[in-house]
Image 1: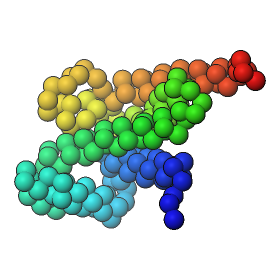
Image 2: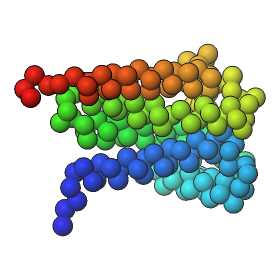
Image 3: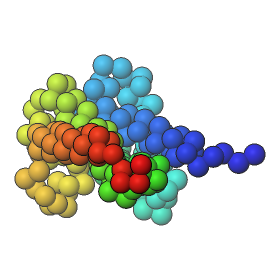
Image 4: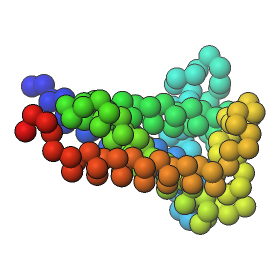
Length: 176
């Protein structure tokens, strides 16, 4: 029995969002309140890193032993998951038009990103005005782009795309 495409895309969206939010909580130190969960997320990320990048890294049982390479791996994986999420949302809404699907994907991705800025502000305030990702700092990519900028940008994109989508839903189609 084959799973319908919309159910498969919904499942992909759920899993990608869950892992992204878990990584956001991990990197913003929100999981410091539950050391067991933090250890599980660290082990999950380290195991994935050793499976996918075995030629480049040895097994990393903790951040202390992996250091920056594990944090960079999580950054790259999060970006890939955000891309997968955007494509899945876009694909789910293409029946309503490409422009509508594009803005819906922007809205969902910005909503998924927004909690990172909030978590950093609430639980790791000293990092609020610091670079967003380890890979960004290590490679001098957008050096001035901080967690505060990420929160502001994701909020603006979410509001803008939401306004467009609300307007698009109110306009009756020419065919109907």
